[in-house]
Image: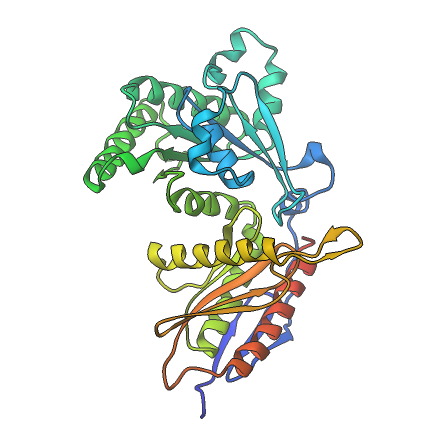
Length: 365
């Protein structure tokens, strides 16, 4: 069988995709910019921050616990309200390295200048990369939430014009699709009208997403947020995945950060939620099986994904292959006459793994 040869250009690597994926050093090197150099550092105070804000009972702490502490959605009903800023370090079991600041709903950051020293406000926002504002569409507090969001955006933008804003319209499992669309349209219109009054509608970009802890939408949304911390490697990752997908006749491929179960990169083919959910379900299945057959060396866990796994569902093959301690490739392959054999897939994966590791090495991650 002869496969069509396609050459893809990546900023760091020249990737030739045929029956065997080959990566050779290119003429250009990936240089970490000053901002990315300080992005992932061992110094806690210099770590980038993601701020989680919103009114009380919007679901901020539930989001944090479901994604980063593996709490089941049903258990979040028994969580106590957050009364002070809770800072957690996302680095111990994750590829990602940042601080997540969970703010109490009663704290209106836009009014702190009247009560606190100005330096307190600056310390909060100066190293923040993304501000997530969570809104509960079920509660009849839209006007209050929009006012709080507007005040917070203005305060953050004054100190850090580079900060990015994400609005999670949360608890979307309780509303239908038409209501989701209406909520996004209404809130987008109201906040843009407020920004227009302040003359900032062309300077501040806000992304609105519907989320729920009872499905995979919250993991998808948080994946997109976390990718904004890895902008210097996203393009190389995507190009390497494109070459891998093309070489192996795959339908879709993701690189997952295993512990929080969020994807940090995917190929350029169309994203659809059922495919993403299928890959997430495979991660859960392998993790559950790993807890049963876990191996230990010197009293430490070796990792539940230390071996490659393949699951067959009708005419579909799900591949899970570990890249390093924290990252794994999950991809979907349809069983067809033109599909590559397992041997070719395994060989190409080794080339992909080498390419990913080299990109991380050059990027200092």
